[in-house]
Length: 460
Image (cartoon, rainbow, N blue to C red):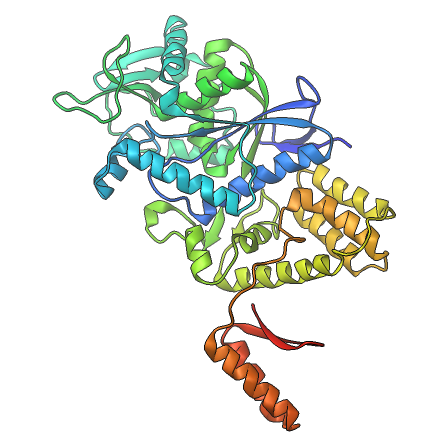
C-alpha cells in the first residue's frame, strides 16, 4: 500500500515515490539544546515518529537523520541577538558545551519515554563545521555571498524562486516588517547569515577558524550541510514544525539549491502548533510545560502521546490538563482491552481492520481515523485472538505500551485506609456509606475496582 502525503512545497497531497525505493531518505529538524524541550516541541517529534513507523508498516525502509543544534541559533528568528547556547551557559553557570550535553541527554531521555524511535543518524552541528564551511565556499564561488562587518550573508535576490515554500500570508508578514532587522548592512530583509564573525575584543566559547575569519555558522547552514552529507544533494522528505516554514526551511532550500542547482527535498512536511490558552507554546514565554511536569501531575508521557493522536498533525491541537485527563482515560481503557487479550493465541481474521488502519495512515498520516479503526476493532465481535493480532500490528505505529503491564504501585496509606473502611461497610451492607467512601477515594485520584480477590484502588 502506498503513502500519500501533503507536500508544503506544492500545497497538495502527492504519492510518495522514493528516489531509491523502498529506501526513504528522511531529515527531521531536531532541538536547539540550550534548555528543556516543551510538550509543544514533542508534538512535532511524535508526528515524525509516526511517519517513520508508518513507513515501516507500509513496506518502506526509512533512513532518518536528525540534527542537534548546539551552536548558531540566535535568540531572534533573524540574525540578531545572542547565540542561545551562550544564553544557556550564562543562565546556568556552565560551559556552553556542558549545557549542550545536558539538554541533549534530557531530550533523548524524553524521547525514550515517549517511545520515539531513535534517529538512524543523530548529528551535532559542532561536529560538522568543516562541511558547513565547505558549503558556504560553494555558495561564495557561485556569487550568492556578500560580506558585512558582522558576517557573510546569502543574497536572496540572486535566487529567482526564493521563498517558494512560503504562503501569501508569510510573504505579507515580511512586507509588513514582521522580521525587524537591526543590521543596516544587509541588502534586503530576507537575506540571512551563513557565517557570523566573533565580536571584536571578545572570545566566544564556540568559535572556529574559517577562510573569512574566526566565527561560527549561521543557524540554517547546518541542516543543509548535514542533510546533504548523510542523504545526498536531493532526498525524499524533510520534516519540522510549521514555524520553520517562513525562515529556517525557506533559507535551507535557498542555500542548498543555490549551491547544487538541484531540488533539495522532494517533500516538505510540517506539524502544526500545540495551543495552550489559545496561544502556541514557546520557551520565550517562560510558561512552557515540560514532560517532567506531566509526570509530576500523575500523567504518563504516553498519555500525552495518545493526546497527540486526537488531532491530525496538520491541525492545531489544544492542550489543557482536562483534555489530557481525557486522553489518559482513553489510553487506560484501550490498554485494559489489550491486556485482557494478552493470553489469547494469535489468530488471523482481522484483514478488514488491518486494511482500514493502513488506509488511514496512507492518507497523509490520518492518525485520528486510524484510532477510530482501533476502537471499532476493540468493540467488534471479532474473536479475541484476531483482535490481539490486529492490536499488535497497530501498536507498531501507535507505540502506546498497550500490552505492557504497568509497574505495581504502592497504595497510599489514606487510600488503603478508605479501602478497608469501604470493605467493612460492604460487609455490614451499609451500601450508602460504601458509596460515599468510593467517592472519597475517587477524589484522591483513584478508581475502585472490585474483583474476585477483593477491591483494589487503581490510580486514574
